[in-house]
Length: 504
Image (tube, rainbow, N blue to C red; front, side, top):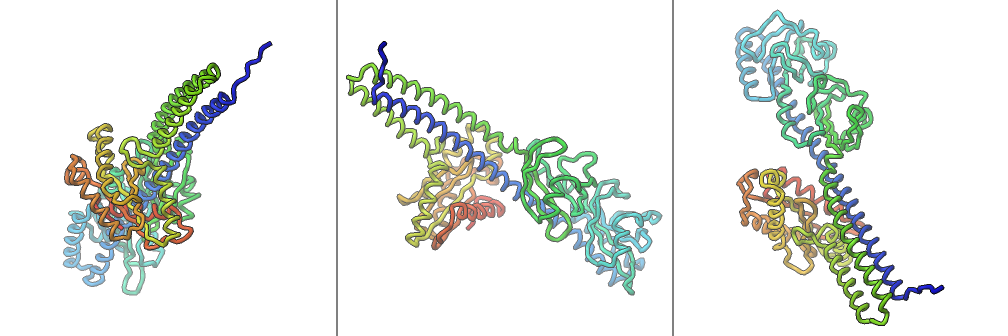
């Protein structure tokens, strides 16, 4: 029996094709996983920032109401509660209730819980609030500070309201009544509706005791509901001032990324949650597209490899053809390597090349003692741009922004890259703060100069916000994420300060 013996060259070629296919699949799997990690990290940053904004809003809302109460207490102490004084106080309360949109009403109660004066046109002195939790609290406690009680339904307006109260002390220090400011829940509804939390996201405002004050989306039993048995309260919000947690809901089974934060001045906390499935929906689509592309590439590459191996086996004597086939494979590998380090949409360096370059420049700066700057760039209101003009126009917009960012590459060592989505970055070795600010401002103006229409952005054109991290010297042990975190913080500040600007 004749046994066919494959030539060493054919064996090497077969092994090469196999390893190339495995490498392509492995690289794409790694890239896909890294993209998921980045997406989840960005979602975590988003819910953390959302929780911070919600906490500041709630703190400011209750602080404004509490400030009104302090003024009312001082007016009562100075003017008393005579008819003329009450008439003046009534006019003041009406004016303050009109000036502060979050307030549903302002009231003053005597020691028996009867209305003395409020911000409404008429007072029903027959009604009593002696049974309210806030009244009972101040009657039984001498604490002069503010008290935020559980939400109630107003007896005067019929609305659900949050309450802020302070104790009125008589001349001898005994209980003299309560001053009350009520915050309309519709005020929180309007503010919370301005956040994009997807279809399965949620926003919660609650007392530190676990009583829910407001929720988006609002359910019939949301207001006043106890959260004591929920994971977000029992395991997180009740134990730490702020944080982030991945929690699967016991009610609807949805896995959500939760960011929570306590208020600075009042015994309350807020929580913002995004559905993990919704966060990763774009990543899944991108992953499927990449997987399909890599599969087609691998099949084509394997087919080509098989043909090459067959020709080597059948025509060992035709050495020139075999050499040409190997050369073609090598050129294809070089092309794939270049493609793996370049963003296909903008032509800038991709995230992989950016990460490698930043690590390299940090090491170089540590050795040389030179300065190092990093600029993070984000297109303003880009989601609105895609919603208004479509994703094809969005891709063209990103390409044009990338052209403007390329103007920041003044030296051979500078590197402009697409960091992800509508976010870009530029590494500036041996560049101090002044130089980085100059380059950032040049990029910002270059984007504006293109005058790309954007009706959803102030000014009607596409703009970018830029955050800078600049180090005079780079200390040993510093990591890439340290620079990126600082530059991101500056970028968030630029966004918060109004966008279309540079922050350092």
